[in-house]
Image 1 (tube, rainbow, N blue to C red):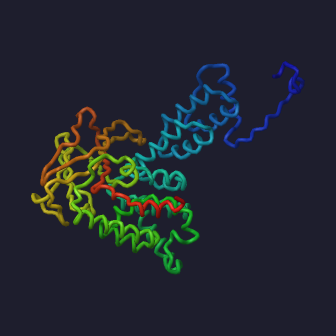
Image 2: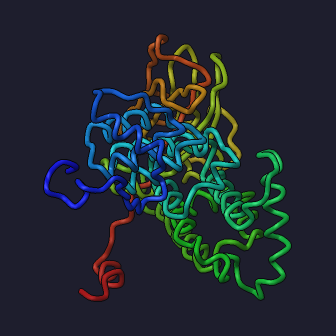
Image 3: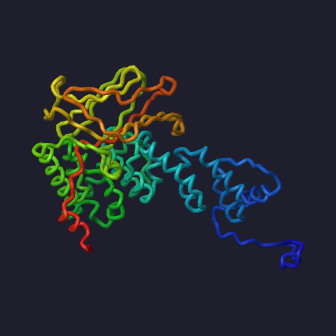
Length: 392
């Protein structure tokens, strides 16, 4: 270029127009230097600038090296910047890795700065995913969303994670009187967040009385959303009580991905644990036990006290997926196990080992996440299909 019959060959100074603000002189020096050596040292703090320069100069080898550096250094401080840059410069594998990190860490390792950085588009993907590693129950997903929305609206807030929920509730409570009968998501300020809150699985929030009262009192979610879910759950309860409902009989992956109950638990250290997740589960009182490297599901009917009603049907089935994970200090997955989606049929007070763990893979704290369907999807009638597809 500089010695041929080009305009630049006779110029002492050549000016390059750099349209990308991520590119600086140091990044260009590294990019040009990579032409003369196979490998260059890329610091995580410089990787986005170097990736931008490499993309402009179409240096595929350097682009690939930047991608590998990014995948190895994803953490709470880098994940959002990496995700955005991976989208800008076409590194789909990095984008996927960032999304996986966020699905694993959003709920398990909540962080104020991360919640500030997460965009509406990214949060929508996370909340809509069946792979979100939920801790406790769906109500905790709602609570995390509420805190995230507050930080999007008040990004200057700089308190601690411990103070965040209280501050969030106070802030929204003060604005209730200005809503004029509307819920917050119906206001101009709230409308941008509607698409994210739409992905909440509200049926698993209103199934618990305390949670239902909180979500009503908060006045964030439109009443119409809740009314339709109350109706849906009431009809599902009648079906379970009066229509010989025994639970799912086959794996319906679409239904499990989109509508399963999401819940989780952190086991801080090895030992014996037994718990149940809160909420009305159509008479299936599921007890979960961790002991001696086994995870056991039990359908409690008559053996142990239960705060709600239990089904006395001889057999009940659930569809489930159980996942276990351990993370290092940066949130990177260091070991994981999954059962995949399964159907489990239990008689009254029967228990079943659902996972046997290799002691070499047990690294605490251990995070457990489950997806459940307690009743089979309702069969759609022709009328249902026509009402959902008016153009047909």
